[in-house]
Image (cartoon, rainbow, N blue to C red; front, side, top):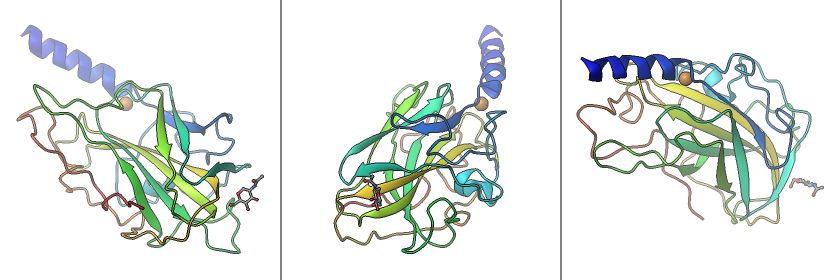
Length: 225
Ligand SMILES: *[C@@H]1O[C@H](CO)[C@@H](O)[C@H](O)[C@H]1NC(C)=O
Ligand SMILES: [Cu+2]
């Protein structure tokens, strides 16, 4: 009885504990990150086939600035207020085609490659390193070409993901300029929407019972230089 009451309470609390991903590096909120549609209500994307699954925008609206970073270095992506829900953090990049404007490019097509995905620890319950964190480091691969990119940050909340459509996607895209890169063309590119299906084992999953002993991140493998 007490245990189920505690479960109900924690579920009720966590249902309102939403968040945004508004900032990179030493910038301001939505200065280099395209202002996501949840900027006022901290809501989430629930459908993997929605156009919002790309950058959490129903229609493209660029940020005013671009954040430059050298290939191989680390960038910090901030959460506001914190990543309150259990689930993986993932990062993707898409290179803005030469001659196109980073503040206007829509990121359509099979252009996104994954550069990071988080794995939980396994035991009495899954342990997510991102849980309750306010920022995440992300390393820009040293071998990719210089130029402008969209950096897509995604935290997937799995606390109510046992039924289809129950996973919550917290997403935003930063405009970055990569300098000092190499000449490797990344593999395993995907499109958004398109990369995920609602029944992917890393999206439709009961993380509470039975406790999983493995976790398969949704999307392509992580690109390695
Ligand atoms: C920012 O990055 C872009 C793309 O690599 C580059 O063209 C531009 O010169 C960089 N700006 C600065 C100030 O380094
Ligand atoms: Cu929430």
